[in-house]
Length: 102
Image 1 (cartoon, rainbow, N blue to C red):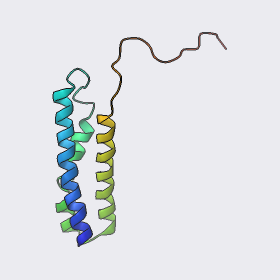
Image 2 (spheres, rainbow, N blue to C red):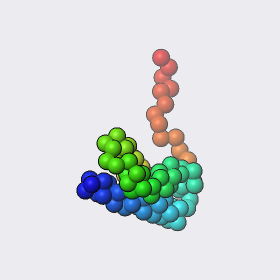
Image 3 (cartoon, helix red, strand yellow):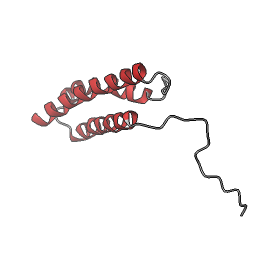
């Protein structure tokens, strides 16, 4: 019961964090982000709002707890990936192209 409550509260915190990061990215990085780029973060955050409800209906099923936990981990990873700083593209090709010929 305590584990389910902890996962439920973590789901709500993750959901609010995911939606907040998505909105922040749209507001602060208007030129660097397209709406579809982090749409997975937005929808996964919305799904996490249902985490406590799902956990309450399954009566402590470990597999459901693991699935909701995996969803929570995926939101955390997506938030880290969305917030990491990337250099602005200057229009130049950054990859090294082998022009010597094989």
